[in-house]
Length: 298
Image (cartoon, rainbow, N blue to C red; front, side, top):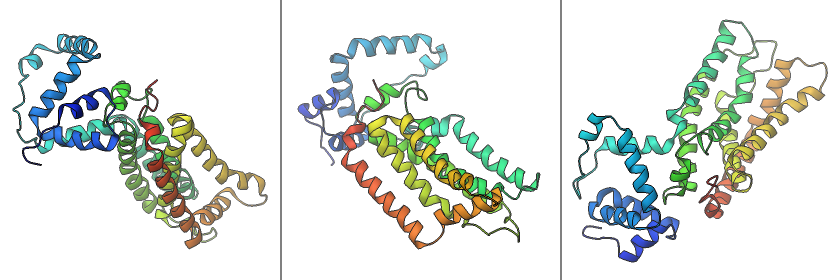
């Protein structure tokens, strides 16, 4: 609201981390456009218990910065509107290694590798293999994009008022934004298995299972941690796909894998089951959102 400023008690609870998550998100948005309140929050943080540590970190960063960068530092104008480029920069920073690191390039290489195997190597099993791996690619992306092992600033980002489940969902959305179009496009480019083999599921049939498995890994992360949860979910899916093939006899690998994927991906019952699982996982995430406030920060 125009002319509204955060009360002192709200600023105090925001800086010490005791403010409710929804209120903290609202104040986050207000601070983006209110220089007066942003200055008050910054002063409160410097005056708190973390002030000396933050001052030492700031001094170290400025001392290590090149001289031209220090000379270009200017104070922001209170109340000045933020540029669109600044907002995009903050979004990309929050997205983390999902877009800044090498993971996005790895997904593209997987998609191109499947196309190369199909056309360059003449392998008819490239399409079913890609569809079998596609649902766990976002699951692996979440594991590689969230946590101390992937982000050197994870403790700071996850402990901030905008961290927790909000940060985890931002990273997950970035992972899905990279993997879903890349793998779906690669599947569309791959040729059909051939007249002697079953046609298999539709190329986009993996999207809903992939979303359900990704959300399931997020739910399990609240209990086991991000890496362990993604390993359990991803390993469970690969076991569900490969175990029937190992137990069956007399069926070719490509034909057996195609039939197995058709069972999981094709038809209203299977897709309806994945949709129900997606909704259930989303509800569990909302119900246990406070469990993610300090996820993997200790």
